[in-house]
Length: 102
Image 1 (spheres, rainbow, N blue to C red):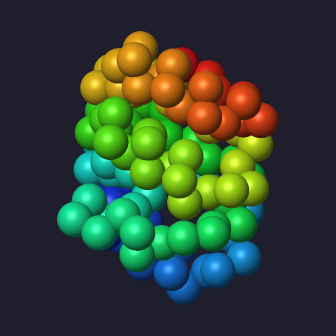
Image 2: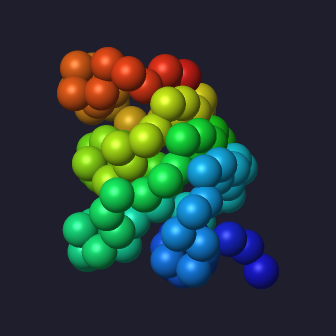
């Protein structure tokens, strides 16, 4: 069995104080919010999120993270090939306080 986006969403709902999330290398993870209802997760305590080597992560996922993680300080998107340079730029412009690795 592998980690999925649904599993990550359940984990985040269950652990409201979670500050670090590392799901690097999980091919079934497309982000940290439910794709059909990204607003279901708001005001997360997450400060560090590592989504490196998650091929399903895309532009929409990254923009959802920007909205739902006000405490975020570090986002790792290394080798997330579906994240465009345009989305990365938008993220950086909207969240200058976050260090983003691409």
